[in-house]
Amino acid sequence: MDSIRVVGGNPISGEVTVHGAKNAVLKHMVAMLLAPGRYRLDNVPGILDVDIMGEVLEHIGAACTRNGSVITVDVPDKLNPEAPLDLVRRMRASILVLGALLARGGAARVAQPGGDDFGSRPIGMHIQGLEQMGAEFELRHGVLNATAPNGLTGTEIFLEFPSVGATENLLLAAVLAKGSTVIGNAAREPELADLANLLNAMGADVRGAGTSTIEVYGVPELHPADHTVVADRLVAGTYALAAAATGGTLQVNGCDPDFLRMELRKMEAAGCTVVRGADTFTVSGPERPNAQDIATLPYPGFHTDMHPQMVAFLAKATGTSLVTENVYAARFRYIGELNRMGADVHADGQHVVIRGVDNLSGCEVDGCDIRAAAALTIAGLSADGETIIRDAEHIDRGYDGFVEVLASLGADIDR
Ligand code: UD1
Image (cartoon, rainbow, N blue to C red; front, side, top):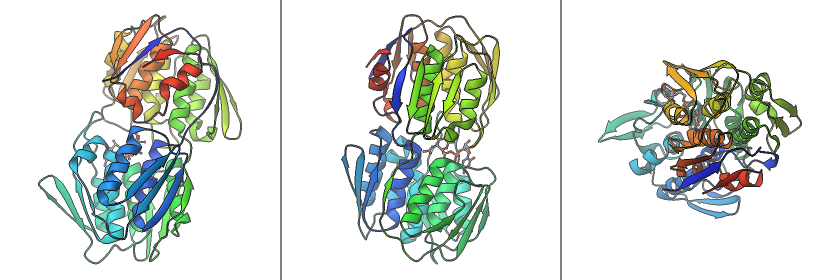
């Protein structure tokens, strides 16, 4: 296991251009299963999760080749419609092949995902929606066997929560279904709108993606298309918070500041100066942040995947902050690690209480998960002395060149 070593004290300043979004590209790769032929995806980050999704596609029969930030995917006529447990365990997003495989060939076998560090994370909404479209499910020996004996048929589905994954699974299923599908209370994430753009370029008829009602008019077949992946707003937000926590000034390029509207607004309220442009923004950190109350919510609310990084920033605020986690039942493992560095943070139910401290002090901490590892790095950048973040592989799942980028922005950091 690799570690990241960071010595705090240097402001994170300069200019960074963010790469394509993990939470978009993984879905784009699945969408390619909907029609045979050759696809080209541009602005693809060099991250572990893309490699794992590549393995999922190869297991299903597609061939993926990478050349820098471009991947080429060749999808054959005949697919092996299954995602085995070892791949689903390594990456939950593998379950998105359900909708696409059902739509393409009327069958899918996907290992039932178990729990993870964020709580149980069920997939009931994915299954209920697909059942409404005519799919049948049977769980045998830990594997979900899905079939659509009479093909999928469009219908009206109203989600009980705007789940990103459920919306995407249903969208992928609906594009080739008979008739039209309406997904109500849909997730509105920019990555989902980007997926709809790719699907429409492939010949689908998807309207309203990015709003809470998505209409899909089924078409008999789709064709390959080329696509450029939308920017990763979570990477953009992480680097912005690294600058904010160290009193630096950072220009973040390639990302529409509207994708981080709530996050940037909270950073301003905490004392940051934010200057917004078209596809670029600049953040300058305060001497010391003001305490803030924040609630995570589906887009356009404050993103749950920015919660740990924001808490790391608020750890040194003047006063007491309250962050309420509304998306996941349990996303608190990073707190104990942050407290080892001298923070005063505790969780009470879904609420995280952050009493600001004057200083953090570096020590050895566990990375826990992607955003926790990013948060602990931010804490390390603003702490006294040396912090070692163990299990740095978590960072590789979502950040391309994380250590190199931060080093180029002034951090004393290596792997
Ligand atoms: C996606 C993102 C993840 C982000 C999350 C919320 C990817 C690969 N991952 O995950 O980084 O944190 O959106 O923005 O894009 N739920 C149910 N039943 C369901 C489906 C979901 O109860 O059938 C619950 C989940 O347990 C969770 C909440 O809904 O508590 C949100 O999950 P969801 O929006 O589905 O997240 P993912 O798509 O898994």
